[in-house]
Image (tube, rainbow, N blue to C red; front, side, top):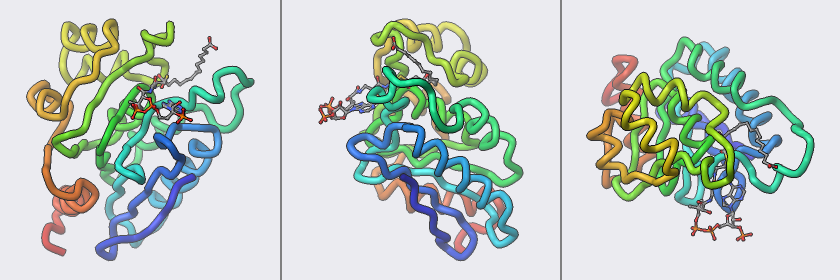
Length: 193
Ligand SMILES: CC(C)(COP(=O)(O)OP(=O)(O)OC[C@H]1O[C@@H](n2cnc3c(N)ncnc32)[C@H](O)[C@@H]1OP(=O)(O)O)[C@@H](O)C(=O)NCCC(=O)NCCSC(=O)C[C@@H](O)CCCCCCCCCCCCC(=O)O
């Protein structure tokens, strides 16, 4: 449900692995929570990158579990742990970052995205509001009018627009995981390591 590896000797690369869209199922939340804790506690790890496999960052909460009672760790405390971590965490966004997947990226300290990726809060189309922090984190980044536009319409925006709005730190046409790892190394003063 997540893969954990050390790249460039000191970056923990955590990959969401839940086809088809790496949704945040109970098993993914549990694995992500354990791996964030592992990375934060490993003295060899200087920074963390979170990405998704098969060209998709994350489609959000797992809608296949909506009809079941909540199991596994809730999303918000997990995202709080990412944000409170003392090591920089970079989201490497490819494909889509939607709903809870976008919220996961918002709680990371930095966001790097592929130029073809899309970000959005489609909760309104399901009759709910973003429930894992986007209603606070997004206005802090881009202000209330642009946030309300995203929250109330559910429209996706393209990476270039997200960069202009201030949601993203970098947009790339290259391999987004590799670029995010370099970004993470730069954040801890280890560029070119
Ligand atoms: C992701 C897409 C853009 C992909 O589009 P594409 O055209 O490429 O492909 P498909 O649409 O054909 O989809 C392929 C495949 O993937 C499945 N899928 C898509 N999204 C999800 C998902 N989120 N979870 C599980 N599976 C998903 C789809 O069914 C297809 O499967 P198949 O077997 O048919 O091949 C596009 O699919 C898309 O836009 N998806 C919607 C994404 C979305 O809506 N995400 C938001 C989810 S809501 C959310 O994230 C909430 C957050 O704020 C977190 C909240 C945390 C607290 C949660 C509390 C629970 C809330 C309880 C609500 C109760 C509702 C109720 O019961 O009344």
